[in-house]
Length: 69
Image (tube, rainbow, N blue to C red):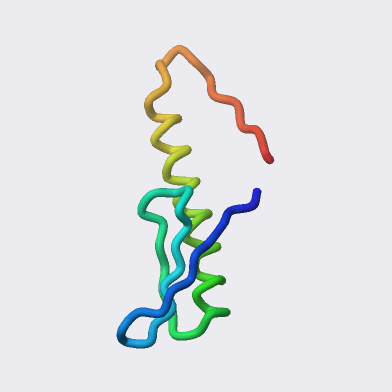
């Protein structure tokens, strides 16, 4: 999957990375390369957490299937 990411520099010089498609998915580092590496991890964690919430909300008589994309 591909996501758009926005990089901004804060007042302390840190690079803040945000994925607007995923509410609350932010990361920051001192360099652009580090911020991009961190936001990739943050996106993965955000998607995993959302999947866990969705799986927990399924009725107990349904068996979820896993599909890789």
